[in-house]
Length: 184
Ligand SMILES: Cc1cc2nc3c(=O)[nH]c(=O)nc-3n(C[C@H](O)[C@H](O)[C@H](O)COP(=O)(O)O)c2cc1C
Image 1 (tube, helix red, strand yellow):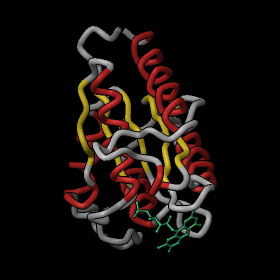
Image 2: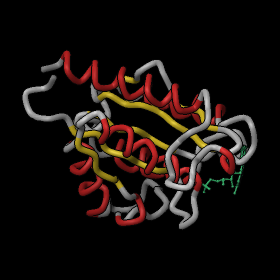
Image 3: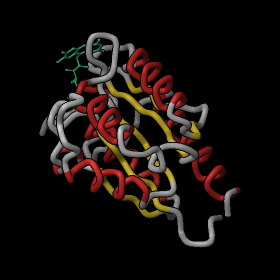
């Protein structure tokens, strides 16, 4: 294990109140907590992140977001799929922060998860996120949590009960904690 207890952050690509990806994020947080690990949310709605363009001065929210991300040993990105890709809220946050530095991504352990109402579990969004994060130097674990048919995936307490999504999640979390622990 790492010298200090590890902390896993959760970054969701949907800001919607009834988001199924927020639901998946909460279910994954429960699993991580059950493994004795601290968790925290990285809520993109709380940062000043206008749509990026190159004439804008870097908003303070970008530096605050970078600092928040740096405070975690690992981060799980939980995102919906929009038109076969990742949503603009998430891409905008990645793009803005990448204009300042890479310390919040490069070398940090990341996991990727996605929930969809249909059966395909946001697999194309996960592919895109994987590609972008690899390009930025993230230490991505191979297991990802694809969760399709969201209305049947959770029990009344919000636990992720659907298979194979729940097993994928356990594997992803195990791989992340292993990687973090080997860094001591
Ligand atoms: C602009 C847009 C594009 C979408 N494209 C896809 C898609 O390509 N694949 C998919 O599975 N769902 C797609 N959906 C449906 C979303 O998966 C669904 O709205 C989901 O509930 C969004 O995630 P959230 O509940 O976490 O906000 C799309 C939704 C929107 C608004």
